[in-house]
Amino acid sequence: MFTGLVEETGEILKVEEGPFLRVRIAAKEVLSDLKVGDSVAVDGVCLTAVAVDEEGFWVELAQETLRRTAPTWRVGHRPNLERALRVGDRLGGHFVTGHVDGVAALIGVREAPGAKDFYFRPPKPLARYIAEKGSVALNGVSLTVAGLEGEAFWVTLIPHTLKVTNLGSLRVGDGVNLEVDLIARYVERLMRGE
Image (cartoon, rainbow, N blue to C red; front, side):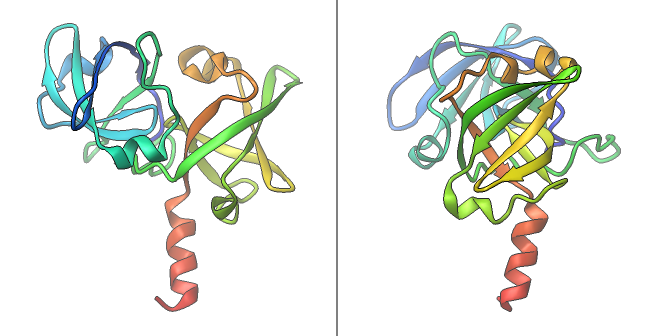
């Protein structure tokens, strides 16, 4: 479980193909107490650190993970990183599981007073879980949905968020890892009587 408050952006240094995609990520902040077996949100994807040293860590991605996430697992990409929530930690964002639901496409950026509005189109089956003033995680960043426009939604990003996450480097057409609000999923299931 995570909060959606990014601790740092790392850098993908190496990618190795095999039964799993092995990815080496350079980091600083998240290494302070990271050990093998710990969960780390990498662009919002809950992954297990399979090796850790003083300069970074390795993770492995299964085919299902690759199928559901944005195609950014390449050398040079700077993923958002967050260690798992611990009992007693502040929950400054919202509950983020790290189980990405799909990829949302950035379809526009508009200047707002002191900020920027980023417009995204989610996969159609996920649109019903996104509500105005509700929560979403985009590349692991906990955000409030500012508004809805048809099947699209937008979030307002303040300068701090643009600076400390990789969202500020997005271009129209880029995909981001989208996790819809967990509570919305459970409410729907309860309403259906499952």
